[in-house]
Length: 100
Image (cartoon, rainbow, N blue to C red; front, side, top):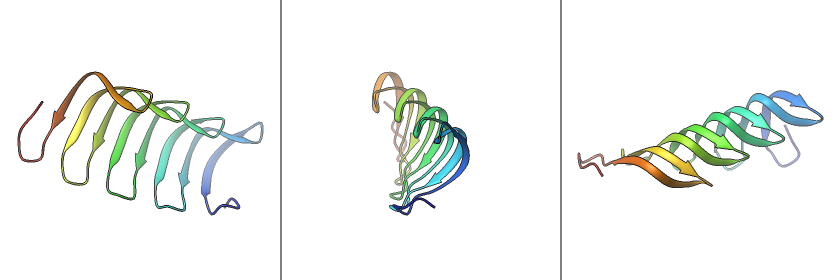
């Protein structure tokens, strides 16, 4: 456990978590996947305390590339991301059945 209450279990390189590992944040969020110098990078899953789940590609701590965000209410977005934002082609599905 780190001094701020964060718990990391995984690979370390050059005294930084890099490689593959799981982190549990004090706020209840949990990330499992690949790391580069303390940041989610390449592919992983982030389960947020508020019920959202992102599975997909990351670039230095931000959602970037292809991924799926599932929301607590059952809605989902599957598609492209850039700099933590939906960007490019994607499909937004609503739990009530409408798709955009």
